[in-house]
Image 1: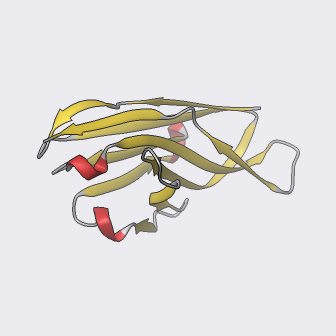
Image 2: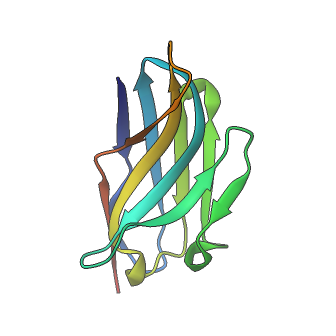
Length: 121
C-alpha cells in the first residue's frame, strides 16, 4: 500500500558527506512523522533523526550538529544531509514513515528496504 524508495547511501571517507532521500508513494492520505533509523552489525536499530509534518525535528545525540533532516510534504519525501561523517556512522540506514492511508482513520507504520552507508577511516 505504501512504497518507500530510498537512495543516497554509499562509501565515503571520514569527514565527508552524503545525502539520503526517501520518497513515499501509494495510497497515502497524509504523512505524519518521517524519520531515519540505522543498524550497525551486531547492534540494535536506533533512531537517528525524525521530523514531524510541521517540521519539528529530533536527533540522536551522536549526530547533533552533523546531520540535518528535512522533508518536502508536496513530494512525500524525507531527506537527511550527513556531514562530517565518522567511521562509527557506518550502518544500514532505514527510512520510516507514519501515514494515514486513504480510507483509514489509524496510522500505519512503514519501513524502507535500507541503504548502506560506509565511512572509511
